[in-house]
Image (cartoon, rainbow, N blue to C red; front, top):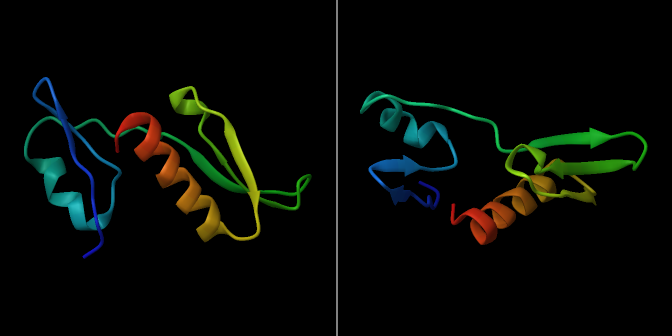
Length: 82
């Protein structure tokens, strides 16, 4: 199992979704929302992590998708505590 961060605040649990945490979605009323878009950018010739949905920057470009996902997770940890 990979490492997960759960943020509990005012009776809410926030976390970055993975299939390992899917059971948490049935424990109460769940809202799932996208916090970023990790996609290949042809203009930049690399992967970017657009953190716009949580009022963040566009990170990258990165050589591969895994680097983009890692940057996304690091940004979420630093700025949102996830």
